[in-house]
Amino acid sequence: MQSTVWSFCWFRNQIDVNSCTELERVVTLVWHSAGLLENGGFHYLFEGDFEGDPGFMYTAAAYHRIGASKAYQAFQDAIRQFPRRRPASQYRRPPEGV
Figure 1 (cartoon, rainbow, N blue to C red):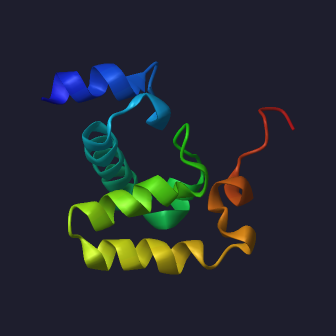
Figure 2 (spheres, rainbow, N blue to C red):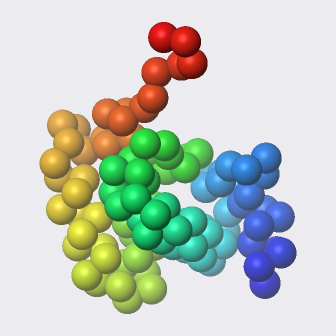
């Protein structure tokens, strides 16, 4: 299953949510976001984004879909801290050399 999920949703080291089925989206977003969260928390996750998931709404919904209600609530609490609930735009790193 892993190779099937990655072949549709993972290209050139980026996730493209728009090219995923619901199952692929849920598995891919939980898998990758969990790794980022474990390595640096929400700050680390919010430094980037997943293509097609502005504001990590699909990512939060993926945790809800698998029944991880505490993780889903943590996403909701973290996202609420940002104006317009768009955390990714708040943490974008400036281009190299700026």
